[in-house]
Length: 262
Image (tube, rainbow, N blue to C red; front, side, top):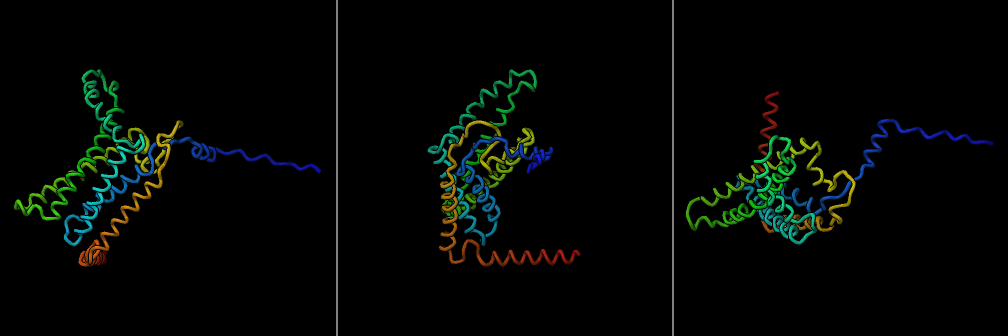
């Protein structure tokens, strides 16, 4: 008895497209610790900035500021001792090419002759280096303000200097985000995605040969352990009871205001 085997259905255009998308080659360009750092860095800065104006949130603000300093220390060490793709020297090399790039602008005859890719990379490297550099005076002035060092010299000038660095860092963060969005539009590719997945599309060897997930996990554990230690050593926790009460009160006020508008 003959068995008739029906042919397998051919993949239609949608299925073929999906299969091709899945099969696209990719390579790892950023390892896990290098990706973990900016997300923790951004979280700490946003939290510290939002908690800066209330004494009830002061310990939370200070804790996040200390965490920023610790993250900076980690990034500097990893940038000096870590794998090649994570070295800070790569950013310095890009910045070192700035004079030659600016000189080339005086010789171009049209916009098409400008090396736009190099200019974009220079801006990105400058933004990252600026964010790293400003953390040092920001955290030092914050530490001095928290310990009332300004009282030795009189006035609130130290707190004002700390606020200046905080506002400057906010501007740098917003400019960095805007630059990433602009480059994503220009290059028609999400420039932030590699800092999530660690990979970019395209064939070739991995720039980050090892992912070092264990080190990223240790970094996260260290941050959480420090936050827990800060919480336990304070009688009121990182956020005082009046702050929680005020937050709950604000939420109730907003709710009643919405009901009145209805």
